[in-house]
Amino acid sequence: MGSELLIETVHSLFKEPNVFVFLGQCFSESHLLLFPSGVQGDSLTVLQAPEFLSFQKGDWPLSGEKIPDLVALTMGFSVEEDLSWPGLQAGPLFQRPRANVLVVVRGVDSLDLPQSVASYPLENPVAFTLDSVAEMVHSTFAEYTPVVLQLAPSEERLYMLGKANAVFEDLPVTLQQIRARLSQDGSVLTSFPLNSLSRNAEADLLFLSEVQVLHDITALLQRHRHLAKDNSPDLYSLELSGLEELSRVYGKDSPQYRDATSILASVLQKFGEDMYRLYGNSAAVEVVTVKTFEAPLTRKSRSILESKQISNPGSPYNLAYKYNFEYAVIFNIVLWMMIVLVLAVIVIAYNLWNMDPGYDSIIYRMTNQKIRMD
Image (cartoon, rainbow, N blue to C red; front, side, top):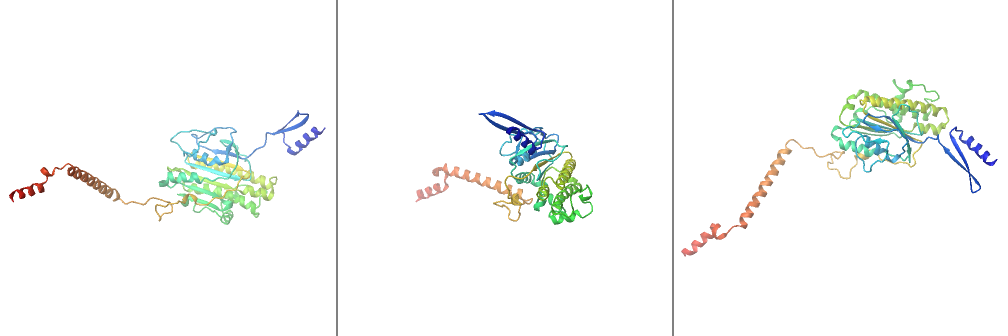
């Protein structure tokens, strides 16, 4: 009777049809083992990927700290440690996507994204940044000034590099600017029904502000389509925490949270399709959904611009000095003059070493004749 009561209690707690219960006898005691097969955890979803990027479908878990390495590999860069993860197969050596877009959604473990390439469970969801990948892009393609954009609207954290400063100059970044943008023509408030969401609640406005930022990014790229056709890959890193705030204020079972989750899923699906199309079907778009990070991360903005030794104090980017067109001429003059002088010294030293004063020195002969005359 006690075991039956325990089983009924467990079923009432989980209320899931796919919870399996195994009851065994061991050492004359009852042991209850639960296997919740339907529980979903944090995940990494590949929304869009070029044909030459081979993402294999499966349930291979990926550690959260390895996400920057995964992004670097998809963009064709090498990493310090090999990523022994079967989800990404080796692709062509001379092909790389024109852009990589990573969206981190906090406050939810999974989103309904049916039109995705593949989805993988995420384990050890520690906080991370793509600073290392941004530095690779900047150092490798510095002459092409690629677009590097890292944005977290809720924290008003923005980092732009290269052509991003010109493209996203009008992008609202502070919460006050984004909320003002929501009241203007063409805002996302007219694109979908708000249902239980309110335009006056702070948590709701934070979520809607993040949706507005996604819309404005694609709208601004529409005006600068030529940037998606250059020879340098672009990097986008976005962090959205509106769902986390809605969950904290209203709870996960609230209609506001459910409506926001549905809206964000459809918006992200369209955002991925737009970015993929803007870059000529050569962009990788990933979505990381995590309830909460295990450890807080403190980062310093513009960290990739810092350098211990700056070769050119007048430039904050640690660039080399600019040389004029006479540099090559002066360099060749100095180089060949030094070579001629070195050869002359060698010839003179060799002749002096092998000289016989009795036969080769006129001074010796003149002195000898003068002595004989005396």
